[in-house]
Length: 366
Image (cartoon, rainbow, N blue to C red; front, side, top):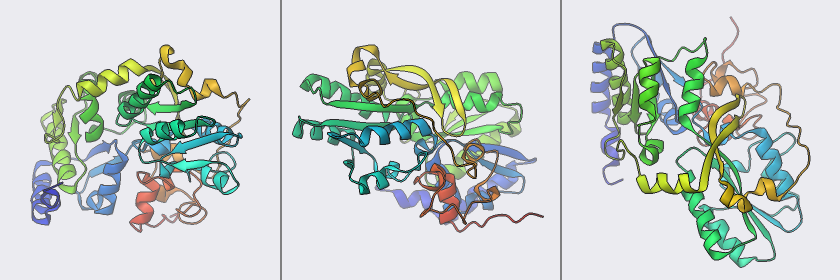
């Protein structure tokens, strides 16, 4: 960005913190949904600088972290087959499956490749007509348009050797699932700016009304987050519960209509399993019936899978904000970025990775 430093100005940050201290008269608990926002909050120490009583709860906004274990096991079973090129983004390669990860599988001879865009996978399919090319398509609404375009492009080219292993998830159903939990402490949300840049914020309006929680669409830089927190706390103090847009430089209420159209054309809403959380109704995307030929889960019968989570990993509690990484007995000992037990320690958006990179130490029992 041309003016990126403007959103990291320490003097303006101090002013926002001072205003927040003036506005807040009681404790409030806010959740940032996006893992990128979590990393900014933790890396910059914003969560520790907030006025006493204002607490950030880190939500399930890491797309790599919430990809179900069964999907990873299926991807590895497909990648192990002769004649298959499995492609993915780099941070997926080290996410632990039940017994191994894609990077280790590649070291043993599987053709697993890192791509920078899903269209790279389409190009590989054209270059290797004798090979099956599979793209592991994960993420929230942000990545869905590009993945949808690859299907349309492959269809136009008549590529019979290209397919997607789809594990897309949707933000609003996760928010409602959290709010329906009787133990939920969240009183306001910071919504992910990049998701809203695609989808807009209309889907959040019924949530704000039904649950009486403010939702503030927020960017990713320190000043974005501080202003978003201030806007949310101001609403809470005044008893309001509306959707507001802090990220005005990138987000409109209706989002990107062209991107939304291509997603609705290629995908259909479905129930989706979330790693560590369970299956949430209508919380994911799958390929529409007319594009079922590009569905790798149908193309490759890998037999019965029996995913097994490491019992020491508390990823589910971390993803829902019930616990912090520093509450985990394995954090920083058995589980590190070099030897991760779960996805939150691997991904560039994982909460455990954010805490570890910031030097946060594990809590000792009282």
